[in-house]
Each structure stands twice: as C-alpha cells, then as structure tokens.
Image (cartoon, rainbow, N blue to C red; front, side, top):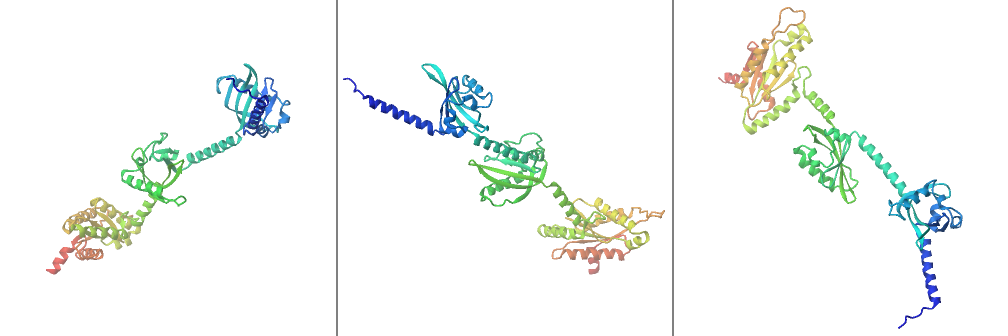
Length: 445
C-alpha cells in the first residue's frame, strides 16, 4: 500500500512552524548569537547580542565586520583556537574566555562557544554564542581581594590564629601560631588540635570545644586562660578565644591564642612583691598568716606537728643608733641570708617586723626545731660585721623562741607562745634559744 500523499500546503506550513520556532529560540536565547560568513559579514545578530555589544541588529547585520567586535588581534586569536584542538577539538571552540568591544568602546569579558558553519562539506561561515561574564569576573575579583585582605590580616596578626576542621585537625595556622608553637616555617596543617595542649588540658579542651558548638550564633565568646604546648615541649600561658561557624555544612572552629607570658610574669612579680619583704627578700608578715594557716589545717588532718621560731636581733636598736640605718640594714639582710641557707627547702622564713623574724618548720617537733635554731644562732654569731669607721669587727647575736603547735590553739596563740619563749631568752642573758615547752614545764614544776 502506498503511503499517503501530504498536500504541499501542509508541508510548507510545517516548515514555516519549524522556522518560526527556531527563530523564536534564537531571539529569546539569553546568550548573544552572532553568525557571519567567511569574510566576516554578519547575517545573524540576536536580541541578547544587542544587549551585550550595544549595537542593534540593523547596525550590525551586513554593516559591521565580525572582527570589529573584538579588540585588535582578538578575532584572529579566536579563529586560531577554533582550528586548533585545544578548546573542544578542531572546528569547535568551547568555553573560551576572551574580551569583546562594545559600541561605546568599553571592553567586557565574555565566554565564547563557537563552531564552523558548513554547507555541502564546505566552510561557509561561523556562529558564536556569547555570554557576558563581567559580573562573574567582578565577583571573582572581589573575592580574591577579600581573600587577599583576609590573608594579609591573618598572616600579619600578632596573635596566633588557628582554624580547626570538623575532624579536629588544624586546617590553617598563621605565622604567629607557628612561632608561638615553635614550628617555625613548618606547617601545622593536619595536626590534631589536642596535641597543642598539655595532657592535663586535653579533656578541658574537648569540653571547651563542645561548649562552643552548643552556643547560639551571635553569643559573645568568653576569653579563657590556659596553656599551650610547643613542639619543644615548652608550655606557654595564653588567653584563648574560640568561635565556631558552619561553612558549607562543615563545622569550622577559629582559635585565637594571645601569648600572656609577659603579663603572667608581671603578675607573679607583683604577687611576690606583695608577700615579700624588700629588704631581706624573705616573705612578709602578711604571707606568714596564709602559710601558717595552711600548715595548721594540714596538721589537724595528719596529726604531724609543726613548730615556729621567733627570732630577735639582740641590741639592734643600740647598734642601729650607733652606726646608722644603713649598717643596721646590713645586719637584717645578713640574717635573711642565713635563714635561707640554714633551713630546709620545706621551711619558710618571714620578716615579722623590725628586727623580728619567724621561721615556719613543717613536720617538726619543738625538740627538732631547737637543733635547727641553735645551728642558726651559732652561725650568725660567728659573722663579723665591720661598720663604717670601725676597725674592729662587731658580732651580733640572736635570741630565739620556739613553740610547737598544739590542737585547740590558733596561729596567734602559737606566735604568742614563741614570743614568750624569745623574751625568756632575752631575760636569761640573750644569745640563746628557749623552747616554750621547757618554759611551761619549768613553771609547772
């Protein structure tokens, strides 16, 4: 059976519909479409091309050479790449980025897809699809500028800055972080964050990290002081600020570490100054009460005794008046030195006031304290002092009272007992040591 014959008018109508459809696609396409023959004469210039280039189709078709749409040499470059294998193969140009010249002379960046038009196997021209990428280029430029600005701040910051990924590893560290942690030019990237802290702080860091994750956005982050561990094993006190953001679904933590070693050193110096007698460099009376109370509490727990020496320089006022305060200060400094040298490291010396000194002896009975006190008294008495304008050395002696702590008594009671024993030593002729326990036994007897 022969196929039905299609009326000629129906075939023509179909061709017209297809032609109108294709024409509509070309007209409404968001990309600029330009077609030209081998001599560069433009015969297709759609609405998007008008928008990109600034020419109307009437101004372009048959009147403008396609080469005029590019900067000098641009059309030749496009043609060379079109016949190469580099961008899509010979006869095709895919995603090639270059510049075109608008009607107003302004150059704008475009992405070009181009192919050769053929008829019966012969090249008859070219068709190109142009996409304006100036917005994308501008965005990239802003992004690069922003990144460079951030990188400049990041690298030049005096504080150490570290970013930590969701896997708990360091993803970035600035130069200050490398210097603080002792890695120099080595990269910290990939290191576990917990390795930046001493073992005793690892659990604390984990808790801190979880705490940061639970915080609502915009909540002020607290500064926390702890210690970081350098590559060499040295510990550095820092003030840590931790913030967290979600970037592309990934949790990123930013840690800022400020080295506070200098401040901590200064604080320690101020603390030491507040509890130290500047003349003798022993602890002062204020610090005595703090340490003595600690020792009292310990003794009540362990029932191990401790004792106290109260030392007074014999005839100090007479010596001071005769030779001046400067010479008197030499005597007090010498006594401070002897206290440091003649007792155990666990024992502590204090300047109680004027020419009176205290020595706290943990885990020591009054009988054992008597031996230590006598050693100090004898050694100090052997020191030759040579005041100015005096040819003959002078000897200075000590009177020492000893008291052992007894449960039910206070620190003030202990000092008072040692003071009574010291005055008993003075009344007995000075340059001697008296144990309060012996004094009480004597009176009780």
